[in-house]
Image (cartoon, rainbow, N blue to C red; front, side, top):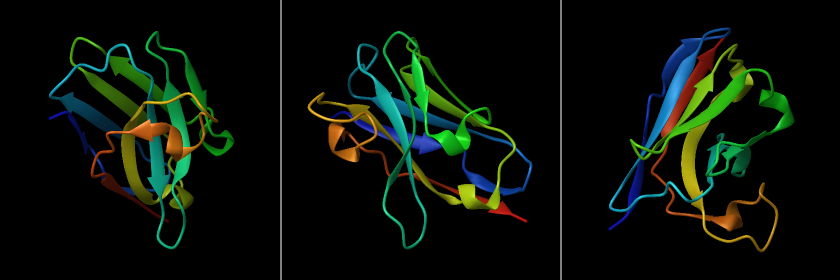
Length: 124
């Protein structure tokens, strides 16, 4: 059974960096676009970044210039490098596979195979 497992979260001070990983198992997703989303306490799931199978990327405005999404298809893994972290980046970060193209890339409804998430806490 295919699944995604995120790792790399933790506690970091504002201005610090973390690198999240999303490792796929059970099948290869090298031909699929992938996304990172996050959910803060009391808020809905929000789009963070997206990468196509060929490496093209899209980011939410608040993380542009600070976050970088990448992938290593040989390792069946997607990464999210997060620099200059801010307290408002605190959330559970999840990765997912884009499984349908019926709507916006920013909508969680376009994605499946959600991982369990990894917690990122940014202190002041």
